[in-house]
Amino acid sequence: MANRRVIAAVAHNVLATLVSRYSDYQGYWLFGFLVGELDRLELDLLDGTPRDGDSAAAAFARELAARRFDEQVAKARVDRSWVREGRVTFESVPGAIERLVGLHMRVGSDVRVRIRVVTDRGRGHEFARQVYVARHPV
Image 1 (tube, rainbow, N blue to C red):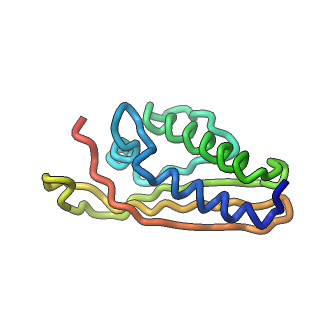
Image 2: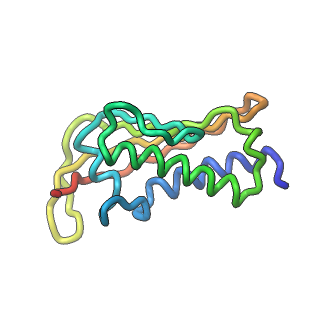
C-alpha cells in the first residue's frame, strides 16, 4: 500500500485524464458539450451522482470524474479512507475566442479546470489547467 504523499499524484493524474481528449461523450470531446451550457460546474470526486437539473452531458461529467478518481486511487493503491474531500471545478473564462481547430475557425472559450483533494489529515493538494474548448456543432 502507498503512503499519503501519493495523493498529490492521484489528483494531478485525475486532472490530466479529465482534460484529455479521452474524455469522450457521444463520440466527441465532452467539454465541447459543456462549454456552451454553463459558466461554472463543480464535480464531487467522491460522489458521481447526477444532480437535478443536470443536462445529459453534465450528468456524464459527474460520473466520469468520480470514475476517473476511483481508477487513479486504485492504481496508486491509496486507501480510500485517506481522502476526505475531492472536487473538480470547470469555469469558463468570460468572452468568446475564435481559434483555428483542425482546418476550421471555431468559436469557443478558455476554461479553467481546478482539482482539489483533501486528505483525512487535512492536507490539501490543488492543481489547475486552462484549456481552450470549442463548442460542438451538434
